[in-house]
Length: 341
Image (cartoon, rainbow, N blue to C red; front, top):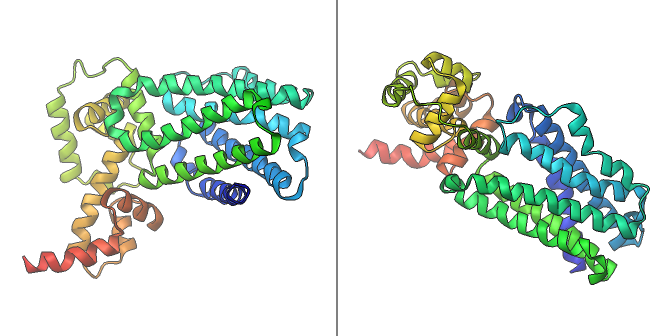
């Protein structure tokens, strides 16, 4: 158990670095500064906790008994809430600064609390935030078919977090060293499941946000000829190839269709069964597949840029997500079969 905990602590640190450099890029969270900043703060807090756990388990250094550790415990749940809220409740108005600041009060006060009281309070607080998350996800239950496996993995993360919260609320149930071992292992396991989830669905946060926006909003399509709007959308993609514009946005495309961004988001979600981000990536990948086979001498990078991706890494990421292979593998496997026909 001790060795596994040490390995998972190391994995947590490197995983946090990878997520900060890849998933939390600015382009991934356009117009979502609060979500991005809170996500990065969450990663930092978890790394700090894991560092304290490592010092205790490996070198018997009681960093977990310091005021900094107690304060960090109270940072995790609010940071996760402030990261999740704009994604799960995109229709809500941006919270004023004072409201955001209230979430920091427990972390500031925790330094003055004794360890015997701080840890149970931190985990009880965390359980409260988890209850909000469960309620928000329950609201999206009708959309679970779109995210069935991904939500299952995140559900396991939720269950692990809830279990740790319950144990942390009654620290006397387990010996201190065993609890730290289990807690650090749980954080590492959560990182592993999140990495698997994002590997399957790199744009998951954007897709969930779009789905939540459509789920919470009252219908905006009452006066829209949906069949005609979908036909015009298809024409823009097939004939005018608007997907080639790397800066194409939901609002920009909606304007070309004479719709609002909310109307286009709901139209794509309700009639095509996917979020706008996923829809756009699929159209770009469909065009890329045609070009990969039609122009065998064209480089993979030139194909990706031609269909609207901004970099080779984004192109590879989307291609793997949708096709389950790299562009080069697709070209190699599909080229001979196509030629034989």
